[in-house]
Length: 249
Image 1 (cartoon, rainbow, N blue to C red):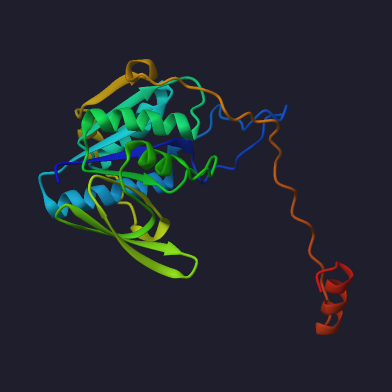
Image 2 (tube, rainbow, N blue to C red; image 1 turned 60 degrees about the horizontal axis):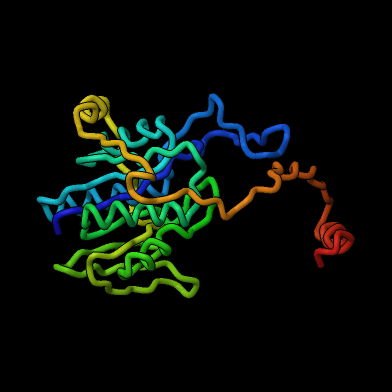
């Protein structure tokens, strides 16, 4: 194995309380803290651990987005990625466009393995990895909770409804990761300083031959309903009576 490509996305930090725009056209992003999608951070951590175990592996972090996405790529470099590539686009990128973009990069870079988070916390689409594998005509393993590399194969333990499933895929392959795969490392200040000297290239969708088509139209965005006030009951009998009245029994 010589190269691992990790696809990351810039999203609103999971600690931030998301607010909907007054006109309902989307969520407010001005002045909001942005971070690497948590699932993608786990994917990057796994790539770095494989690099540390195997040795001689280059880790490439790739993202699509506005110019400020370089901040999240610098975080990836500080974690330990060797190179970063930003495909700059001011337009909203849908899962299909993202998959086409990552495909163009993969065809150019020829990685042995492509890691992605199973989904992004902003749209929860859970589509990009599967689309990429299909268009690249390579095996895929989703919801990975354990990854072992053995020569030209990867053994992946997946979380499924019935429990755990272990499959083996030939490399190159696409793997999407789940929460329990690992815990990303803490980025220290010296690593942040070193990351400033690592290469971060910028390209465009046009340069990769990809067009940002719009297949999904957001009609309206609504905030979640307010939590209803709880009801105090004296005993179990009264609890059953309240639940029955609400139609829950």
